[in-house]
Every structure is written in structure tokens, then in C-alpha cells.
Length: 121
Image 1 (tube, rainbow, N blue to C red):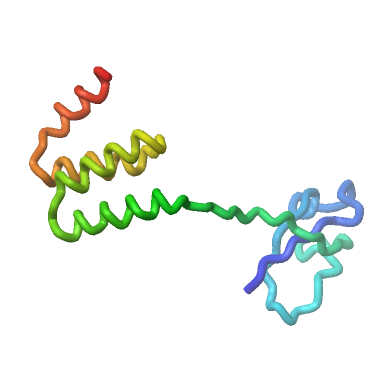
Image 2 (cartoon, rainbow, N blue to C red):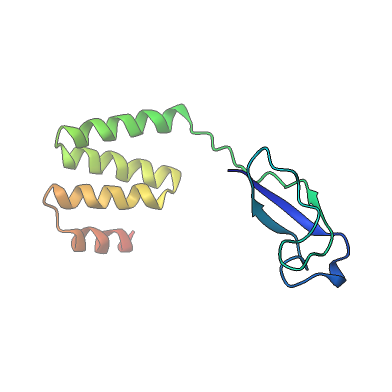
């Protein structure tokens, strides 16, 4: 069901709910509200700001992800870790860095030694 936003026509006369714009879940075929469901004050439907984000991923990053996944599926943890580690440094991705550390651990490396080495750099 869609979420619709409403605001009081006279906010200074509204309740705590309609003092500011508020959201209501309604069926798509329901008529818009004309009154606040909490206090009965007159309200109007407002147009919401679109807060969607489009994230574009470079072909290079997709290629690295595929290679890392391939190594992980094959159980080649050190290869996956090294590739993820190098790429995370290049693109400054902490999530990918964490994935690299997890793969190093699966490969049998001492994570504490790796983290100490990273701090020295």
C-alpha cells in the first residue's frame, strides 16, 4: 500500500500529529483525506519529495566483484582477500576491506598481525 503525506491547512490549530506534515498508509483507490484522522482538523495532500538515489557502479568495480566472488566460491580465500584488499584501498571502501580481512582469516592468516601491519602504513 502506498504512503501518502498530508499537512494541516491551519497548522497552528492542529494536533501534535498534524502540526507538521504526516504520513498515512492508504489503499491506492481510497479518496484523499480531508480531515486529520486524529483531531479532525482540515488537511490537504502534499506532493512528497522523491528521496530515491541512483548508485552507479563502474565496470571496473563490477569486474573486481565478479573475480572476488569467483575466488570465494572456489575456496581460494587468499586470492579473494588480496584482490579485495587492493581494490578496497583504491576505492576507499571499508566494507570491501572488511570482506578482505574475513577472507584472509578463512585463508589462515593471523588477522591481528594484518591489522597491526595496516596501522603501520
